Length: 172
Image 1 (cartoon, rainbow, N blue to C red):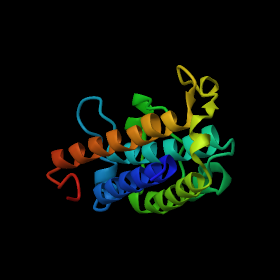
Image 2 (cartoon, helix red, strand yellow; image 1 turned 135 degrees about the vertical axis):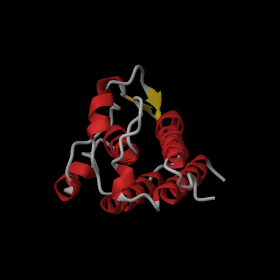
Image 3 (spheres, helix red, strand yellow; image 1 turned 180 degrees about the vertical axis):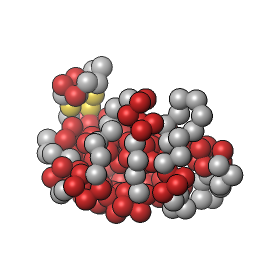
Image 4 (cartoon, rainbow, N blue to C red; image 1 turned 90 degrees about the vertical axis):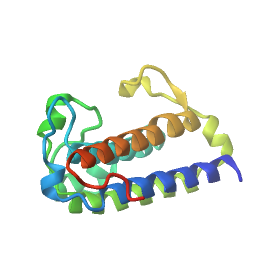
């Protein structure tokens, strides 16, 4: 299995974990603001999807994110929350069913992007400082450390928040 095939498999796994974890989240649960400083589930849903959309489309491919390009902002409403600003995240409201449609589009876009890469593309350096990252990274490092890491980490947060609501966290 080559590097791109491994990445495609890893993203498919991350997408399955995410999708299974949020499948039973309704609007009330998504928009419940937990005690303390944690963001609500809906903000985490949006953050995961917005980050993957922005990171794959804009940072890797140099295109506008689907959120803007395909009119998801108008369909769903709200701003992209790539940065996890505490007050914006805690105020964020969403409908998980609408976000599920956006997730399908983002995940399909990610797989198409990955399908067009080859192993030598994974060594290409991305100019990430322009987007506020502390340093530039190769495509491979960026995809594994930043994008996959973001999805898995925040899916875990969603699972934990669901548990605090007496819901089953992960789908397994």
